[in-house]
Image 1 (spheres, rainbow, N blue to C red):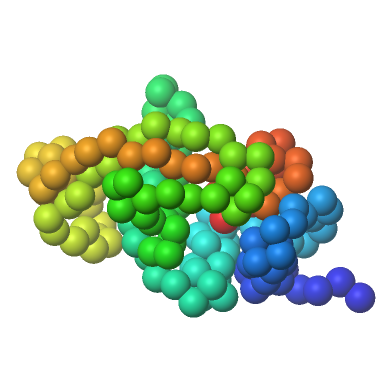
Image 2 (image 1 turned 30 degrees about the horizontal axis):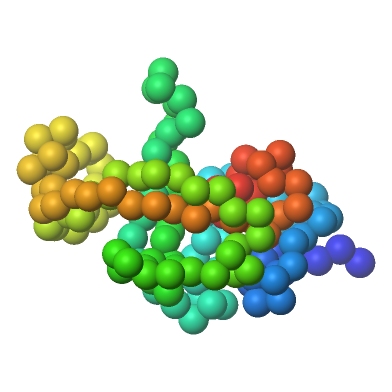
Length: 151
């Protein structure tokens, strides 16, 4: 009997793989999020299972020609201050990405009309450089379903 498509199913597998230092080699089709809303629900479920909160967001687009803008939650327990040291054993097959981080001085709540460039730019309180350690728990990464990668 197949399990229903629910974020908790794949979320638990991902969290268990993180805890055990393993990679997931087989993903059943019903575990792939059906749409962006399901992928974002998967992000939230992973945080809940890890018993952590949102420490920030990674926002970007894979296209410079107006492609979709995606966001990913950054777990609070995965953010480290400048000068911190991490263990490679905690990050199988790590890749380093250099990023620019912005700390905003206001909260943006959902609303019908988009925020203007002026509203967004005027909310930047500070900015700096960061290093992201990218390490997926999927053995086939980066060749996985895009919505699963978003989760």
